[in-house]
Image (cartoon, rainbow, N blue to C red; front, top):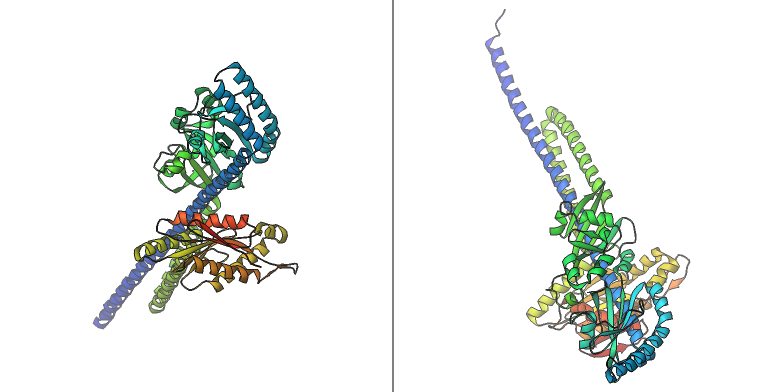
Length: 564
């Protein structure tokens, strides 16, 4: 065989070196491309996972907020009913007469007969109303107590059960009788548990206490009206056993309402409740604010937070008597996340094979293309992060601050004013008759009304001011450096400007939009919750005074501004 010439061997070796270098460059670029694709997939997966977890936490926060609102409205309803009953003259008359009979002849037959006569007379009066209240407001307790030791004078739900006494100094009735101030809250006594309101009955002297109670079952549907979510009220078994009579405990909490160390007071789905409270499956939920839990073939976002009785409301350091468990079905979101990850991996593999082939032919072109794709992917990630950040702080309809962002700004403003000694004011406003607008003209018109309100707010407030939509038709304004008088004037300008800008309905009619507002000036003694509560109280006062007005208060002086 003829030997290759020396120049040919040199060319062959040079070609081999070139090919070797080319292969090394190709392999290096392919390795870099592979690493880049893996990194982008990982970043995309992490971003999507973070977005999923953020959405889960937002849903959990919504459920917690829904429970707080439902609890507040239920307590308010109970307080209104108890106050109404306590102000009835017939109630005062019979409680006073029964108390006088007992004081004049304690334990005597004459006193017993007189007390029984007044008890029956009071039952004849409240009996028909009790039936109406029980079915209309889902009440399960209406009781009357006599001073000074809280003796049960009448239970409308069980007229034959009377003569026992309120359960110790920590019971709701005993605390109301001692303080002579109305109170509400969750309570556990010897015979039952429930949400209650107690109001003192007074004439020229203390005459007794009226207590109204209901089950927490009544709050379940408003908190979560669909089958895709649920709530449960769980009581600490040891806490209930310390206060409740053994027979009543066994009759109320049967075996199907017990799970480990917990008693199920109310639940929209007891089966899911048991799974979420299982020590193994619900372990993450016991330590996290919210957790993803698989129940059967569905994924749920669940949250658990403490349930405090009326004593715990006054003393947050007191141990909770139970827990509120809430969950929402996020199976669709989880499966969408999993599908997106599969799609991302598939796209990444195909892109790698295609780009690797092009790199083998045109290294330079592919390099530039790779840089372009990296920049594009990075821009997509940055855009997604920016969108997530925006959604976390803004109401999606009005583009005003959402509740979480607004309360954060409020907290920062309080800290700033405490540091430099300045003042600011808070305006809480609520649209008048907004539900009627939605019912009569549809939610699209309701959204137009909310957008119109947001527009007028932006036109009216200053650049340093902040506005937020706290939920539904409720808005708040934060006015740094503005005292009560200036804030009230601004709210009045806003009210007049909004009422003069009607909203057009799909039928061609125009709607005059009004609101009621409460204005509160911050003082160093107030934290954010107290300031919000003060503004809300004035808002409710404006509603009660006839709506379409602004009410401001400095200390205990109230000023009502009426518009012609």
